[in-house]
Length: 163
Image 1: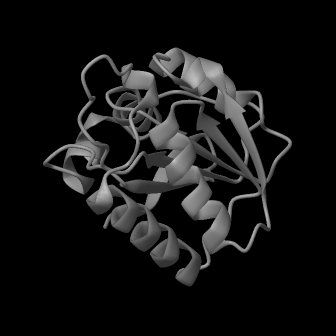
Image 2 (image 1 turned 180 degrees about the vertical axis):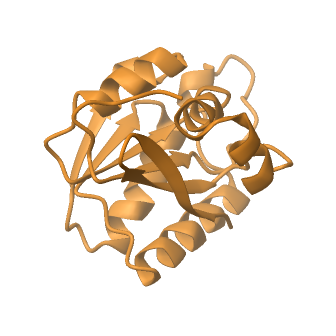
């Protein structure tokens, strides 16, 4: 498992909600959430806030579908957090995601809004394969939100929410 030093107290890993298929000539980067995706984003973010999950900082991929998902969280929190779009998250590797999380350690809690497979690989890197498979045996769903707490030398999956 991966160590992030010094760790934030809580990490949120949010996979973007369901996106529309690319239109002819449209770049993957520009794909927007479809109607179902908008509903997923709103629902998972409302569930998170209802449970008291409120990141201090949201780092989002600059891809349209991630920004739209991050915007749903920002709205659900009534704007009470800092949002930052980060180019490196789009097409970023698990190492990129972990480095971004580690670089935000002064923040008590950080949310990363990203893409699969890197979001799932990041979760696996932090909690281990067995805990990942136990928590989400079908794979990381769109609009899935993992809530991780730092416990001594390791990370523990506190909760997993999905639409």
